[in-house]
Image (cartoon, rainbow, N blue to C red; front, top):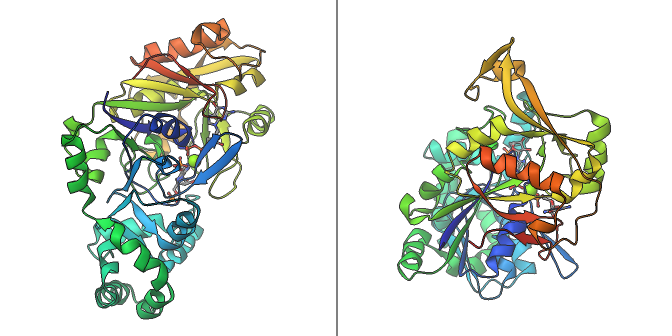
Length: 409
Ligand code: GDP
Ligand code: IMO
Ligand code: MG
């Protein structure tokens, strides 16, 4: 497969960063397609741990071309901070990506005080709102101070916000000057790379259950992490994407508010949280922990045309005595067959579980699927069969090396 979408199938933090970094070893181009610095992608190799919020996870690899596509929203402070850490000769930033300005973060914080979504307070929702309202400021505005001042003033006057764009531009000028040569029409570039038969990975942020359309609305983010949203976010035709690698954590987590039907009791949750260090990479918040939810996964796979699965954090399952999988929901005793759209229905669903025995072994050094405990194999094969997708990888630890290949893609 040449062009592969890496998509989180749950509520984010499935290990997309780890799998992108792993596949980037044999790839020419890595594209981050949506979201902003609400994302936190952790990559571990040679004893080093790297957290990325904005830059594609391919940035670690010297020969990989990295693209930040126009589906993204970009906080310049985070970008400049990350660019100080990594060499970026091969980085291109879309001229159509929208800028997160400091007041977007203030608005996000204020909005979340009233409507408690539990956002990352990074200004994501307000920036995407301005884009849809046709008032947003795009990366191309940075190419001239006069344009930037004009475009920001236009936005601020519509919102009655006082903000000094000239001061902001001048204060950040040294860094802005450095990124201007990287700002380009990345859709044009990407289509050229497709024609040149380059191998391309599309790195999603967040996950399908946080998708603005397909997720647990309104407890979602403001972009489309699903593969169905990807072509629009990067500007290529859908049929140029050859496969979707769904990243599925071997259990479920979510950060922030919102319904979570398979959430488990705090005693077991805290055991898993400590074993897997389930604290948000971006905000440090403890992640909520739940059993695997096949109803949500089947729903997520519809909008993402799942072809392969990478199961992650399987090593931590040895902390659970009985592995439970939710195979259907009921509302007031009645089985439902599609994922509820309304939040009030979601609050009412009762998960039905099937149980699998767990295993007690340390699997962090296992190199082959056949050598995994039979209990884990049965659990993973059941989920893969239900999702009608093959297992491509099983991840048994955070390090790049702790990755079992099941299917060479
Ligand atoms: P992302 O947002 O999808 O990239 O995921 P995050 O990086 O936010 O969260 C996943 C966390 O799990 C990170 O701390 C990873 O280093 C870690 N991780 C990834 N795969 C594995 C695994 O197989 N086992 C363990 N124990 N940790 C893993
Ligand atoms: P990665 O890419 C987990 C959650 C927030 C909140 C909701 C809306 O690391 O998987 P936002 O700031 O986007 O408006 O918040 O979405 N959220 C994430 N949860 N992983 C992420 O990214 C997330 N990005 C946003 O916690 O519930
Ligand atoms: Mg994350």
